[in-house]
Image (tube, rainbow, N blue to C red):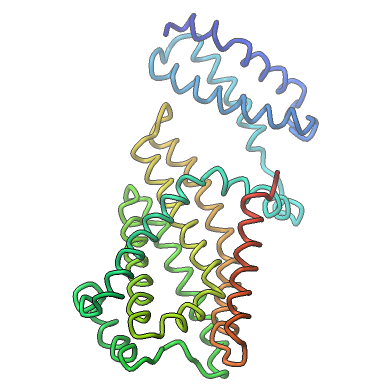
Length: 318
């Protein structure tokens, strides 16, 4: 495509973007909600056009014009706003669920990378528990397998220990989630490893405990907090995969710009995971091990938290 053809094909959108910028006069709040949405869409399209022009004819006047237009739009689209309660609430109510849906393909990929190994190893160890000696870490073999063979679980904790365990569990979950996210800087390879490893661990333990008739007890312990905790791991893993993908496939943008944009979105996803992990850690420490609560209550907690979380993520901000 020649510069003239690009200009002819895209001129209408560029002029519309210019008109919105003129009306905004440096402040997007002067525009209607529909115009703000259009401004964002036109800005992203112009950014792609600029990347194409910079690649094919970097010194042409069309490229210079586009560079100025995109820079002008960028100043409004990413205009700084004080970090107040209103901005935080808008992010929680609208921004985060929209960002989740935008990254949904990466979330689903993370889910599969975790769940498929978990399913395979769970079925294997349920039918052949001796295989645990080959697939589970040595520490797990030494500490947990003897308990499982005696039909005992390691999840019971004294009431006095629960506040300490809540803090420790939350910290551990944050570390796992951050590692899944940070693995994106290695083209997503570390993220893939973290997801598969943790899937093998959970699936292996569920399969092994099921063989020794304590699988339902372990599932009852996990289900109360698992809907949130596992979802956070998938979100963090999806964020890492998103960074890794844009590192490998930057598209029309430069690799640096593509990774920067993906990282910005990924960090926002991770920030939203922190309060979810606090909730999951609290449930895991106080509700999941509570012997006074019947299994039906714990399964009900898992159902309510799962439906609530995905109702928010899939329907929020529409």
